[in-house]
Amino acid sequence: MDKVCFGIDLGGTTVKIGLFTEEAKLIDSLEIPTRKEDEGSHILSDICEAIEAKLVEKKITRDNLVGVGIGIPGPITKDGTVLNCVNLGWGMFNVEEKLSQMLGGVKVKAGNDANVAALGETWQGGGRGFEDLILVTLGTGVGGGVIIGGEIVTGSNGAAGEIGHIPAVFGDDAETCGCGKKGCLETVGSATGIVREAKKLLDKTSEDSKLRTMSEFTCKDVFDAAKENDKLALEVVDKLAYYLGNAIAGIAAVTNPQVIVIGGGVSKAGKFLLDKIEENFIANAFHATKNAKFALATLGNDAGMYGAAALIIA
Amino acid sequence: MDKVCFGIDLGGTTVKIGLFTEEAKLIDSLEIPTRKEDEGSHILSDICEAIEAKLVEKKITRDNLVGVGIGIPGPITKDGTVLNCVNLGWGMFNVEEKLSQMLGGVKVKAGNDANVAALGETWQGGGRGFEDLILVTLGTGVGGGVIIGGEIVTGSNGAAGEIGHIPAVFGDDAETCGCGKKGCLETVGSATGIVREAKKLLDKTSEDSKLRTMSEFTCKDVFDAAKENDKLALEVVDKLAYYLGNAIAGIAAVTNPQVIVIGGGVSKAGKFLLDKIEENFIANAFHATKNAKFALATLGNDAGMYGAAALIIA
Image (cartoon, rainbow over all chains, first blue to last red; front, side, top):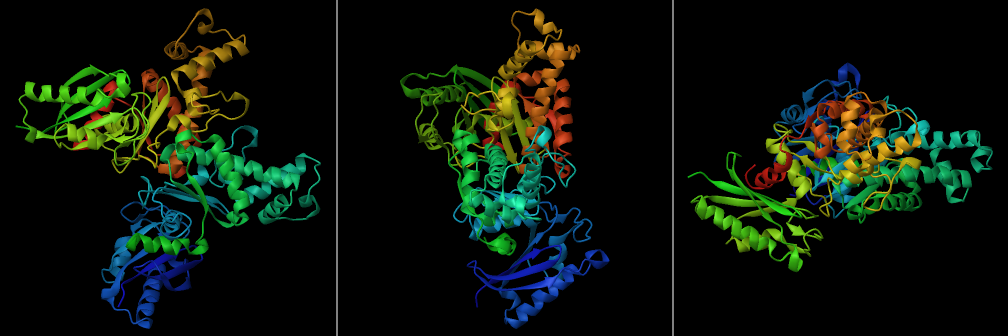
């Protein structure tokens, strides 16, 4: 029988559990709710129960389970210590040791969810074939991960890859970020930020725009209008691409990656957005870092499961 | 007899060669000129000659030489391939293999000079005791290095740690950098940039300043005046600290280092400058990265030799 591993994406609402072959094939997956009550104390036992049930269902013996990887929605150190995971109600403890004990000594490796997603995209997604990668996730917020030599850069407090909080906007244009700082990349790069920027521009100008005719609009509406050459919407997207291109040029001057993968809900705007970011990157990047490739993330919401599996078998 | 290694800092003008014990003690050093004629073809043989002579002088046998580390003033890949070292007249070749052959098979490890200096400061300098470090060198230009887990981050083209070329200044304030881009950190963080900023401010205002009474002034003059509370000079230093603090906050959001070491000629301004940079860092860094320590580089011009030795024995 083939060896297998589990890749687990532990989110604030659901836990996604993937069963992978050693050849990186996702053969089965399931979701269970994340029970946050009682300081999240049921979460790991719920996961163990699901794993045990899946092993029985698939007639997989313990000997053939090479390990369990897990992505956590919070900072985690290199040795697997969760520092403070408010999303789950967890305090500080070593999740690798605890989960391994609960599973009878199976190898467990853990990482921050965004970093683990970056590893997933490196292993089987948009960055496949590369080992030095930056993932930039443009969603409700802006997140990301840094991969060097095929491995996650964790950082001294598990806060490496917090790309959304790079200072990116200065002066009067800088909005306050959810983190409390002003002008973070997230304030302009997130779906929320894009809608806010569009609204600001609508208020500031009398420019004709499809967006002006809508009582409410989403980030997708902004991109759709921009793709139809709506001048105001294009201005919003160009500004976003400018800030992202500059910030990524800064990241490239630090780690000089081979590939930059753009993911998250906003990246559904596709090549239209990717090309604009790359254009701004090339205009602002140091010459020796300019040949970095740009790619779209391909694993979507499965990136976390893939990356968690990669912690074990990549 | 104790084991030894050589740590070599190959510069555009001189080659600094240090002899180190395995316990990281620098026991002897010498300098030879860098002969750049004939496409730099004499450089490695000059180095070999100096090494052989030193071994004879110190009665060190080949068995006791554990290796030779060398820092190169240009981009170099992980496997030791020099890509294009215009400073030396060198084309593309593997300097590790070549120098090792010339030395009869001794282990040779090479790195970019700025990155190697960062390793030196981590090993025996201002970042001693840490393994996740950023070195920011403020000199004629702005350079640096990134150390993660005690190892140099090289980047896909050997261009990691090119901190001077992070986009840092936007809008009308952005000056053109030596690299051709506008608004690089180097345009405001280098000694030249600091003098230029002071001159710009003198031209723009009629503010009284000691600097106005001088026909020419240096970066040191600007700091000396600022330390004596010269308002205009203070404004220049505060602006420098603002840009540096923001850029370092951006770097910290990428790699989350334990310590940030500030080196180069400008860092002779000491704690006065360090405190101002740290203040701006704290005001602009993501909360989980804020506890990074700030330290001054301590190895000065020897950082390259130390770091080169560290490639072999650290």
